Amino acid sequence: MKKILFASSALVAIAAAGSAQASEPIKLSVGGFMNQWIGVADEDNTGSDGRNNAFQSNTEIHFKGSTTLDNGIEVGAVVELEGETSSDQIDEQYLYVNGNFGRLEVGKNDSAADSMQIVAPAVGPVGVNDGDLSLWVDSYLIDTSTTSGDQNRATYYTPNLNGFRLGVSFADDSGRNGSFDTTVDGSSIGGYHSDTSGDGDNIVSVGAEYTGDFDGVSFGVSAIGENRGEGNVYGGGFNVGVANFTFGGSYSHTEDDYGISDRGTPAVSDTDQFDIGVSYAMDAAAVSLTYGYADYGNADTDGSLTGAGELNTVDLGLAYTLGAGVAWKSSIFWFDDEVEGGTDNDGYGAVTGLALSF
Image (cartoon, rainbow, N blue to C red; front, side, top):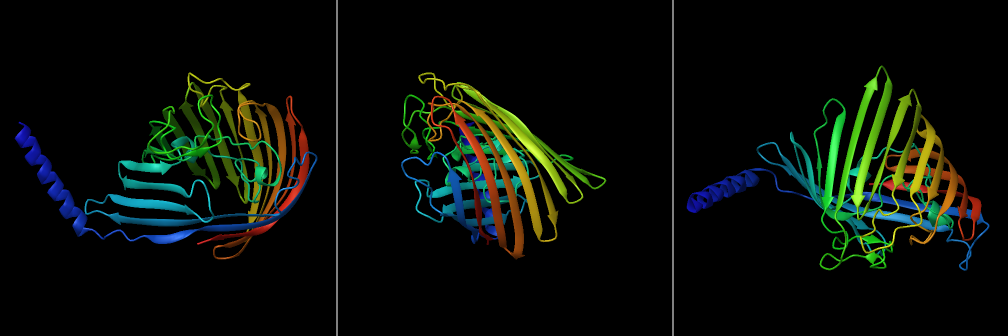
């Protein structure tokens, strides 16, 4: 029986090799983005370092390539390189297999929950949700998706069935996946996690979404969940588009022992956060107004599990497309971060600059 199985396996391998040779070889293309911002901010608590740098940037170079096999299945690769020196120099790297069965991704990438969460519309460079607020001022950063970040994981997305799509991800050890974070969980100080050593927890993520268009009204809704350590994150979001307007928002709840192993100490309390906003687009111009709120207990402003507080923040964003791949974007923002047992901070600022995509 073993010989028959081995012979069958060999025939399958030869057939697959012949199919791959008949298809076009994978050729990588180069793309990415470059954002260069200039900004000013005024805050009550500037800390020992004074104000933040008036110039901020974010650049990535993306290498992508794919081929379609004779059976119609697409196989591709993605590598995203940080354009500046970084502890996480390769942002993401993964391969994918696409077909009528759905999409499978294997490699270092965001989870299904993180990728499928829908949030409030925002067109400016700062925003209120997983944006750049903490680059300009000393403040907690709202993020209504998940915080596990890029991990070596496997992710499967179902085909789009009349607007419905599901996704699930699994990472087997959050401390052995080349991830980078600042979490302190009682057993490590965080930072860079190597691929060969560490003591982390499995991460299971799920996401679901529905998108549709009804008589000119577009609609999208998402639901997400993630288990890491002894706790969970769950939430959802929505967007509604009417004429040139888009309304939307999102919410997430993080349990105090999310990301904490059974040897660690839970955070001060759970975290609830949401954003809500509206945008208006006309021709090459767009404007958005977004509000964000967080009652946080699982992180201080430096990412450690030592503080709790309450954050309110507002962002007025503007964007104007100057040409193909070139956009001028600006934000005017305000925030109020009240830290329990610590130093409160509030202030405002303005940021402008160019966003290039290539």
